[in-house]
Length: 115
Image (cartoon, rainbow, N blue to C red):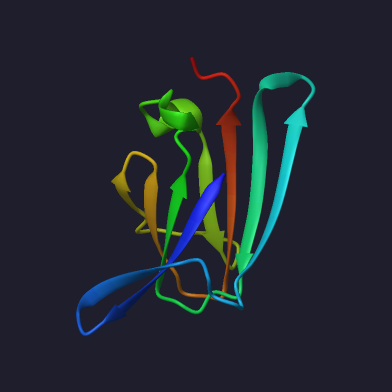
């Protein structure tokens, strides 16, 4: 699960708003590889972005996982077909993503049983 917050910079300050922006659209696809049932794949396309950055928080498996790498060993975030650089890890499960377009793609694996 992803929690999306929109962020804007104003006069050197950053503000964050919850995802109540009416033009924001999220397409989400979850799949499981029958050959490797330990992980499932999530592909999300977030479009209608009208902001300078997004804050994405991945759920931490209800506190059972301490490190984000144990829950999600692979994450790729791109726009216009290129990996986004400058992604900042704020804390374990929170990422700040600089945005330069109206759409990004998030592709990641989730460990079904990270215990």
